[in-house]
Length: 125
Image (cartoon, rainbow, N blue to C red; front, side, top):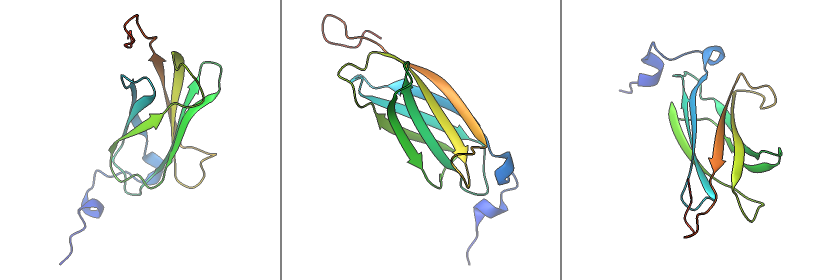
């Protein structure tokens, strides 16, 4: 006998009600990687995510596409690329969608700052 607990959960939302609840961005001590944590409302159908990190000048520093998210709370490590020194301010954007990434049904932004190195070579932040 198979019991499908997901389909029996009355708290799961239909796709048009699914939203991003929280996004956090935390730089690792190496200043080249960023941990992105995303909380999503409970869902019946698995959504997709587009994650981007943009520098203050608007240039893309990292991105990831996530297809068919399995859990309500997920975390990803993104690698900053294309620069010698990652010091500076960034915007992290997470978009949730089902059928078309160009038409997200929810978007959440958060700020990220990569601190400069101190005189010992460690992150000052």
